[in-house]
Length: 285
Image (cartoon, rainbow, N blue to C red; front, side):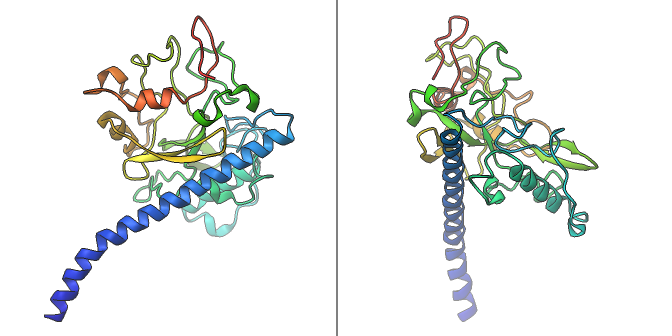
């Protein structure tokens, strides 16, 4: 009888404990986001308002991708060679320490959300959970290449409504010397060519959102605050929870107009994503 009562109590308590654990991870992730945006703002303050780069390729970017030609491969601890997960984690930490924000944020583990479980059960282990919005001093790969990036913090005239860092679900593999790493590649991008704000019905996901916090992800904003935003459209949740080694939104682009009912997620993100005016588009500073 005592054992049965203990089992019943355990069954009742475990869901509550799991929920509390997830809530704790969410708070930890928001703290990471606040540290990252604080470092981002301190960098701008020290560099005549110019903001750190988004693309993870050079030392003036917020971090350096281990597959970049500018990444300096340090002496690798022997204990890491037997574990691809430990190796990916260590290389990403070294990439952050070689980037421009490490001067303002000394803990390299700030790049990882504890709720980001990509690859824990397999080989495609990705450690870096966050990316920077592409037009925040990045170079767009797929949108109109003539669209200029924001290069100064003061160019953003709606700082409380324009995000900088967000979580991204992208577990594709890349080569870093003799090693394979799994990365959020470059900055995070929307395909904004031809889109006129505030009508976002023609948009599709290009880089993928994430859902590390059950049904949502964290964002931080130019003014320094951070939020956990919940997704509402099934198409968004599908790609945000995708598990694989290719780009989640490739071949599965979910447009605002293709979502059943009133689409909410893409318009929410697009209205807070920064891009400049071009070709008749008024932009979204």
